[in-house]
Length: 240
Ligand SMILES: [Zn+2]
Image (cartoon, rainbow, N blue to C red; front, side, top):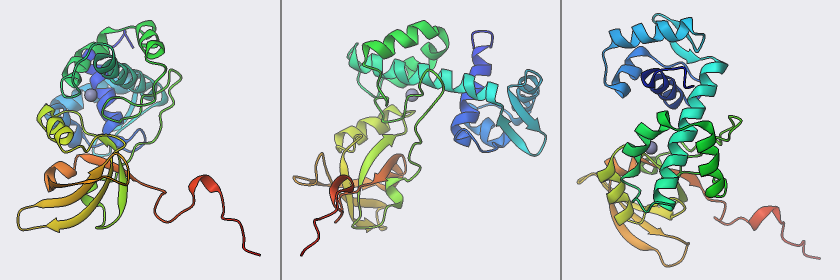
């Protein structure tokens, strides 16, 4: 990984993030995410293809090779461990750590990352709820279901929040829509583009909040298993 420029590492990470590790990614999607022209994306993809880190066909988009994926996951592991270390060990608030991690992810060694992980008790998720890849390149799947798409009345649990925008993270925290919070949409209000939601850490004691639709698009949730089911695979005793 340290053989590659920061820019190359960012390309591999961004291809992984847009394509969820598997899908082909278009040149335009990459250009948008990286804030560069399509022409400079094409130039870089040719270099990365020569290094056997991506498979690139003009007009077909790009996909990571196994070697490219390994480096992408290493950069993501550094990023997410750094974010957690900054919040847990150094007292940074969760809206301040992404920018720092964007720089440090390229600078720290594998040994540094492993020591942070050990100090933090080998955590599975970063402060925004995204999964931290393991040292051997395994990563848990992450939810692609935005809160804004959840049907009215269904209770879901917040899994992760997009972390690029500090103001968004502050709004999310003020509403209590943090990872593991339970949330139910109680009404959609198209006239002002807001959602009414009930939010809390448990299913009881939940507070009514009003959330902008655009904010809810950045909050990713998972279905809960609590709605009318019996816990952890136990079946109710059959009646005689
Ligand atoms: Zn981040």
